[in-house]
Image (cartoon, rainbow, N blue to C red; front, side, top):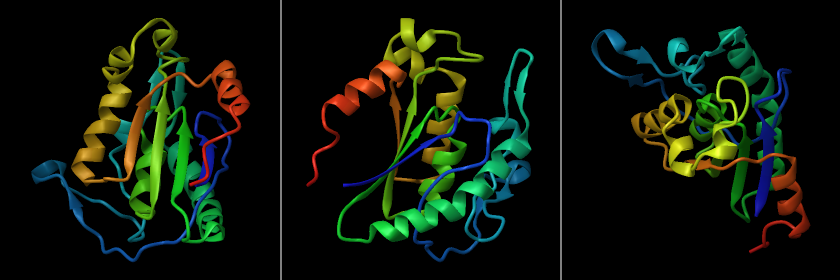
Length: 182
């Protein structure tokens, strides 16, 4: 399996993926809430009020999301293109929060499965993911936003996994030798 992993919890621009499907702009929502869903006919335009990250005195301004996506996009395109088409492509978004990057990647790359890992640990969530259940993680407003937009955009290749991927978990996964190559 082709795997690309990105950590969207880091505050710097970076990332990964590939082949751009041709798409025409479409409207998401209706009435006053309607919006054009793409800026350049390839990226989604998602509502800032639903995807901003504010927790107490910590805030990630909207430009952090849009700027980081602009930095990630060409790298993802090159990486996915380099993987070829002979095996399934999967991208793992660790620390997906509201799913902004996962939704963008899933929309642009219908050929890949996008798996968003959200553990609800950190600023704004405390230790919910460590002390709570998958059901509690799924009930957070960030994950609910992500799930709502997967449905609205009809993205069958975008998934949310309610699991904490801290250093201990990543070490456990790595010690297993990685995913089976099918």
